[in-house]
Picture 1 (cartoon, rainbow, N blue to C red):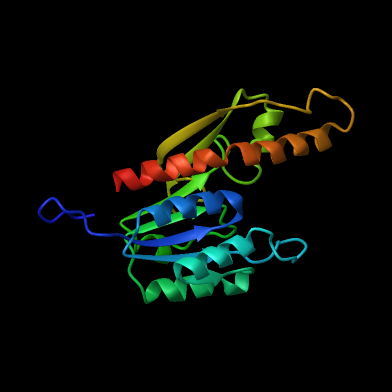
Picture 2: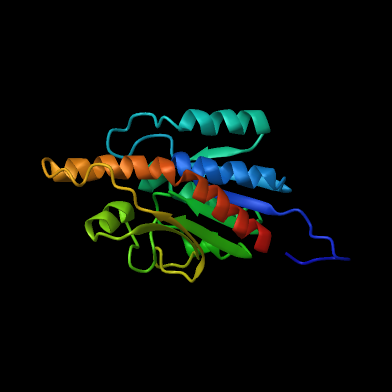
Length: 206
């Protein structure tokens, strides 16, 4: 942001968020009291098409804080984001648990476009980074904030937060993969505060 007389103007923020980790990011963005904040999220589960549990929370926050909320739930709807971006300006784009590729026409409009990924980069780019780290017997999980570029999870790493792995089930050999899935579910909940922390680091540097 450009300072005038040492005063930083309020930001305009575009947030592409989903899941509980996205909610943690959203709550921190709201604390910033931006000039404007717009949320895009996913309403339905991609495989079952059932309503996502956390969507109720996104809807409540949107209503209570009077924040515009949009949904995208299939590839055909991706154009809604690009159309919106073509008609709006924003300084910061923050993505977390976003299911779709973000077009350059969207991320290039922001002064800073950042994705928060729950895996160390570049080693754990892509899907299921926590499960892959467990299978590789890593000692920690890395939450990574990186610049958004056209290559998925390929941008410059900006910040990292680390969580030591505390496996509960994988030492039990029966139903090994099922046990790993149980570990992943628990770890996802336990790392949520790190998404708040890394979002604050992003905001403090903008």
